[in-house]
Image (cartoon, rainbow over the protein chains, first blue to last red):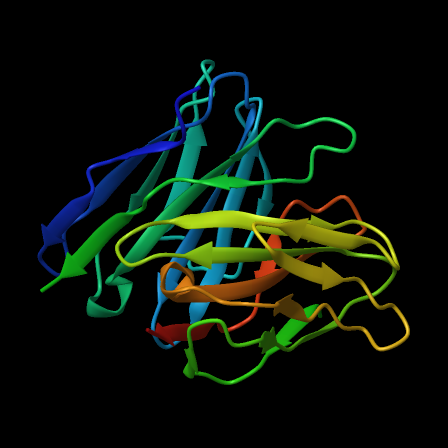
Length: 114
Length: 113
């Protein structure tokens, strides 16, 4: 079974621009979560989507948004990019259901803001 | 709020040495606990998990036991290999149905042949 895929793998943007990252979960997984990883702040939860609805949101400004499609694929968008948004963005999928605690991570998208 | 505290790194060991990476947590109720591993240039891989007190998670020679009384989930391996060199993250999922994972800061492990 194919794992979680994220596109693109690398991205360079300029401050003030916006960016969209994509995540395709493992087949059959209905929950998708996003995390930001930086050397200074470590791994931080952005949001979780299930059945096209955002269920949880972390402590990030409104410039960070996301959505999920009917096929469970998810996108996250960052508007008005700042230098501090440079990070590895990780997507994780989960089967969803009683006892399905494991989240499976993709390889990440490395975003560099200049 | 929930938090995870991990042993400061980096940790450097010789091949076949015994490994312990300490992890303690703060959370209400009975969270689920996880160890993830990240190899260079890759995402996180689930290494092992424990969902209730006294559970022992194990995988690839690594073990960790969920100790409610000491709020700990220390990672151990009896004989490390060069291929175990990576960054290890301890994480918890709270018991309130929130799927958010709270991670420790990570411990970089380097194994020398």
